[in-house]
Length: 297
Figure (tube, rainbow, N blue to C red):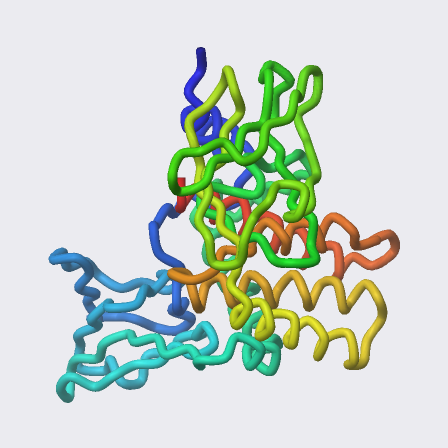
């Protein structure tokens, strides 16, 4: 029997636009001349270069380090250590709905991130795909009250979808013969806010984590989605903004929420026909979901 993680690695290697793998989200991309600047990360030092992705905790050293041009993820910045040393720090706001007001900055960061990653693969060749990304909702996903959960596992060999609570008691089981996707509401499963669960495909794979966001977190996230709905823009633009917002807060609050899967559902609903710019951004965000799965497996 094939191990799910091995399948995931193989599939994602074909799907993804980037070859840089990190367990953390990048917080900045070097966009200017970086001559004579060195990066210290996890006890190792290496030369900085244009297009380099920067991560929280990185230390940059060099005479001209304070004039280094960087495209920053919203809420990322540098902290001065000395005249020739700076540290990358990340300070998101407490309330998740506040991220809505940083969406344009986030899109700017995503564009630069993609350019850096394209340059690192086959001389800039773009990989674009509409293939299903799995597993969904992911390896440590957060469900959100009011939004049905898409479970997708990529094969039709499983016997049943099994969900257990933190006491290892089965709270939900459903036969899945001949299918590879199942959409369920939280109330069908019996999930409770703030509780942790695991899910698995009987006869195929290991267990993967899922939780239902608590009431406070849910209220903040829904408030952000409501702000987008009440704002200007077409229905397609609002779906794109919602998808970006969910990815942004999943990056910002990685210890609390992982809503990349719901971001993907919004992206799947967008009609990009006749709008190349919109289509390009949809692909970028879909690819970020694929990379996120690889990083969190």
